[in-house]
Image (cartoon, rainbow, N blue to C red; front, side, top):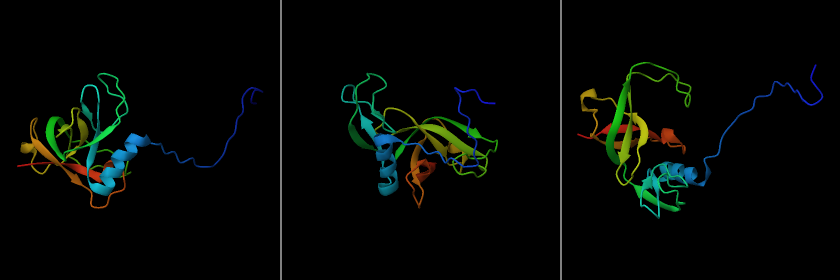
Length: 153
């Protein structure tokens, strides 16, 4: 029996939960979807560029409002090759293995962006390797609009 100060409700209803990414996230995903372009935000105080954009600089705590385009290429700063399969929570499908995952410093950005790395030739995956973004043909305005980074020869 429920106490008077507690309300207990049971239901068979499904509650679909979504979350808002805000102004900065919306700008980032809109540019991915509509223009195949990565954008960041530049700190007016220290000049650092963050991708994806965020409102406050992590180093000097200044408010950032200047959106800037960054390159669709960059450098692998750290990576791993995953050989254990799992269900991708974003797609509900089993992720084929092996696959690469790493941190990339995009041209024009000061922080690292993490995403999948194509494993066409594992010997080419290394710290310092140049990579480029491969965009999905059909884009929906989310991180899956970036298929992976491809190592440049």
